[in-house]
Each structure stands twice: as structure tokens, then as C-alpha cells.
Length: 499
Image 1 (cartoon, rainbow, N blue to C red):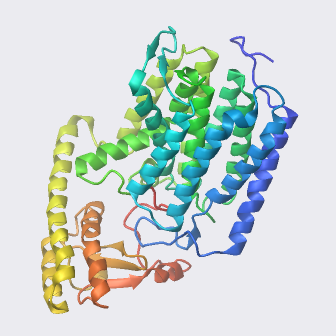
Image 2: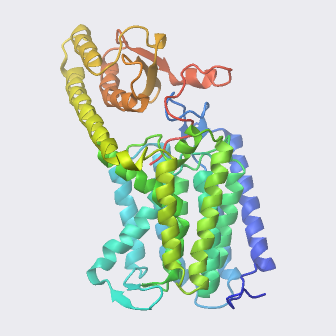
Image 3: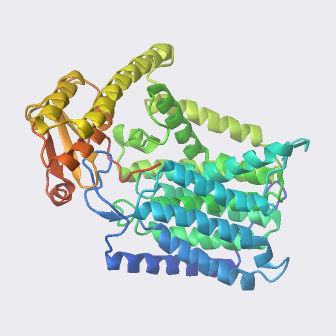
């Protein structure tokens, strides 16, 4: 069967369908076994704020996907019966993917910190670059003009291999979202591999797509298991590496452009996050509850409806990216313009920009809030030092109460009026009342988060802090089964932390 443009439509063979089906079954079984063990390792606990999933959930969802991928790698040399030896081409991808997954898995078990993870990601990307998987030449998608990158090849390649896993990880804040996007992207990579004449890419795309679908059976709302950093890094790096392999080792043709277009929603979400955090003075890797899926829920969408909207958008963009292959780059401008238009519409509809005519005043207001946050952070630094050097509990509490008063929080019963909550350490949640009933809760929560580190330090010296209401996180889990939660989340409903 042929398309109207004269290109052969890729119809999966019986062998490819069998590989996909076995991958689905294997990952489904492995995920079920993992859930049956009910291990306490790598669990994600609700905190009364961003993590409002209501019960303890495992973050080890990347493990069954990884095992399924390894099984696919073992089988692939037998499934690909022609061409160059499989292992000769794939060992750099195998090694670097194992490294990137190990970093994410270790972070799921015990937080490593952003810098440690970044170093590990750069090391994995460096191995792939050293093995010849690099972006050396940029090719114009329509004219065929080429531009050699020279020494820029290294930073461009590293940026590609590091940014895609982090983009996938950034959007993993809603049940089924990152996994669903990964499924669409792997299917898109299979089409890219078909047109590139690379059966190894096709078969491994089918394996990974099947593994993700098997995992999604347990990750759709309400999720029984989360993808975790290990799973998000694994999927993102796999997509980035295979796209690089499909681009003929050095020349960016349609292969990388297809993935960029298909990643339109995550790229827009990441761009919005970077801009708002830069304007507000919040660290770029600081998680918040203002991603696209959070905004959709604020507009009245249910979790399932928001997920469906984002799936449809991703599917449309994936098809739009594939048209770049079918038209040999002629639709690149159209596809890029579509992503830009979607971004402008989303910025307005989702409330990132309240009005185009008042955008300057909105920026000034955001900068004013940034100054307020810097003021609170200055108090927080003082509290951090006082928590270590104060001679007595009474001395520290006096300074703490002054800081709460100056930063807009009450010291009476916090549940008497508007209140917010933030996690303190691993096991406690701090509930604080707001003086201004009309204040922005998200802004107030950022202020309280800035002060929470000092509370955690002080609790290491003194078991109780007068005037501070703290509850154990297990209370949130116990109350989640009741009709009324103990502490309503200040952010729109989300499922687990990201970034």
C-alpha cells in the first residue's frame, strides 16, 4: 500500500507485532511482581503539598522497563538477520543507557542532588560521543545545504543527549503523562527507523514501546506505581540516542527534527518553566505545581481529561513530525509554525499570560514578587545560622516568631483561616496560617519553603518548636482514605515530584 505522496506506508510485520506483544506481556508481569513485593525502597510519600497522591507509591517503575529493554537487546541480534553485527553498533548505546538508568534509580532510592545527576548524565553522553554518535554537520531540511559544526559538535551533542532525558523527567508530574509521551515517541522512532533502513532501530523501538505500554497499565490514574527518575531518564536517553543513531551518525536530517516536533508539548512546558522560574528568581531545578497538566486541572479538567488532551496533542505533533520524512523536509516550516502557534495559544489559555495587552505589568508584578521572595530568603539564611548557634530553644523561637510575623504568617491556630503546608525533612509536614486572606497561596508556599530548612535544622536540636504545627506524613496517608483529607494541597492535584 502506498501513500498519496508515493511513499511506502510502514505496515508492521507479524514478527514485529510479536516482539511488541511479548514486550508488553513481560513488562506487565514484571511490574505486577514488583508491586506484589511491596518494598519500602524508592517510595514516594504524600506531603500535603505538591505530592497529593494520597498514599505511598513506589517510584521504581523504570526497573521493569529496563529489564524488558535488556531482554530486547539480548534478542535483537537474532531478530535482525542482516546488516552489520548488532553489538558492534549498539554497545555504546547499551553502556550509556545503563549508566543513565543507574543514576536515576540511585536517585529514586536516595536523592543524589542535581549536580551529581548532571555529572553522571554528561558522562553517559560523553561515552556515546566518544564512540562516534555525534552531531557533526547540520543539514538544511529542504535545500540540503550543510554546515560543519567543528568544535561545537561536542557541546551540541551533549546538550541533545542530556536535555531530552531531563525534559521527559520534568513533565513526569501526572499519572501516565511521561510514559504516554514516551510511547508515542518510541512509535515515531520506529517509523523513522523504517525510512532510514535500520531494522535494529525499528525492533528496539518496538521493544521499548511495548515495555512502556506494559508499565502504563499500572500508571494510568490513579497510579499504582510511578516512573521515577530512573524510568524517565531511561526513556528520554533511549529516545535521544536512537534519534541520533537514525540520523546517519553526524548529519542532522529529518530524524532529529521529527523528535523535536513530536516533543513539542514537553519542550513548551520546559520553556514555560524556565521563563517563570527565571522571572521569579526560583532555582531552575526547583519543582513547582504550575506545569501544563496542572493548569489544565485548574481549568476544570479531570486527570483523565487532561491526560487525553495532552495525548492527542502529542499524537498530532508526532504525525506532523513524520510528515517531514514523507515530504523530505518540505513541511518543516509548517510543523515548526504549528508548535509556535500552539505555544502562544497555550500561554494565554492556560493562564501563564493573563492578557497580551497587560503583559508588561504582569512581568513587573512577577519581579515585585521576586523581591519579596529574596527578602524571605534573607530571613531564611539568618534562621539557618540561628538554628545552629542559638544558645537555647527560647532564643531561637523568639527569632523564629519574628521571622514568621515579618514574612506574613500567623502564630495562632493555622487551621483557623487560610493555611498552607510544606514538607520538612523526610517525615514531617509543616502547616502555617496566612495573615493575608487574599494573598497568593503559591507565592506564600514558596516563602514557607524558604523557611522550612531552618525548621528541619532546629528539629535536630530540639524535639518541639512552640508556635509551629507539625504533623507526620503518615497522617496524610491514613487520612487519604477518608472523605475529607487532613491537609488539602495548596497546589492543583498532582501525583509526584519532578525535575
